[in-house]
Length: 477
Image (tube, rainbow, N blue to C red; front, side, top):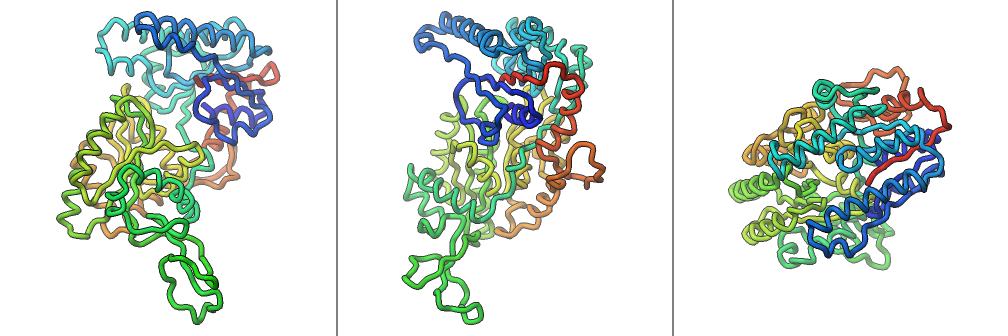
């Protein structure tokens, strides 16, 4: 939703971003003059000390009052548009529908998934609470001014099942322009910071797994080269690996190491709709095949980003498995917003375990990876082909055995891989200057940036019906 806010602000809307304090907003958003960050009031700590049967309802009441206070009182000028991402649906959709009526605003819903299907993962589809949640979502979501959908499948489903009223457009998620392949210099800087954190818990095992390195001249992935300052290009011997420079040494720019481990990234919310067990089983199989290959497969360093309820359980399993592993290491890491695209742009390929509670949405993590030129191995589900085209920009698997085979095939011959290069070629971008209305025949697989895609799809929709000079309330929390 922050990217929606940024796009509205760049089109000179006074943009109020409404949410809870938490992760730091992207710098490109906070630097814009039309953006106002408006925080919801956190519930009193005493509520978390009460039994859930009492504290839960009180937290909901507090959230309702906080949202109404901000949207009805603290934002003085009635917003032209109110945009919200769904899910969450309760209490957000009923409240924003009410506010849009009271203030004469146009409600835009960005449909990323269906909230009741997520609740059904914990309860049965036939559970009364799931039925109530579905009714609320359908009733208050149906009559929005406009609906944005992340897939064609979701648009078709909601039009057919819920009879949506209002304008309807498909806005496939795309990454912002700063998501791109990282340079060796950027990778070097990132892993100078990350490596001490990733190796601190088990330094001896990580020292045995990773190639030797010596900060600040080298990391497990990169190294600077050293030459004598008085050598000329014609007489210089081949660059030698980085070591402590002498008084007359010249340190070159970092480059990728030939003995580096293959870097694989997976982003997860650690929730039941992502079966992390598939990845664990695939890594176990890769470990066995790497041992049999006797050096024919590289070591595999898997970094998993994200937070969620199942993280502790799965990482405990990882710790036990790694006691026997020699070719695989797996770690969980939480990154600042500015470091996340650099990590994706540093990796060799990504893994996505998203299975979708509704089978109608697409994983944003794959969008981010594609933006960084990172091919993905993705778990198959109904509408995944709208994003991942098997053999063109990624690979699709159905089980752990298929994933293990794909990892083995992609990494044959590492650090060079014609398979990875071929998939990466399917993630080209149009020129940065290309915008809506431009006549440009795009090659198959070309990827718009977020701004280019938003300007093609959403900008004409909102600018065709502006009557108050453009005020937006972007509800993100």
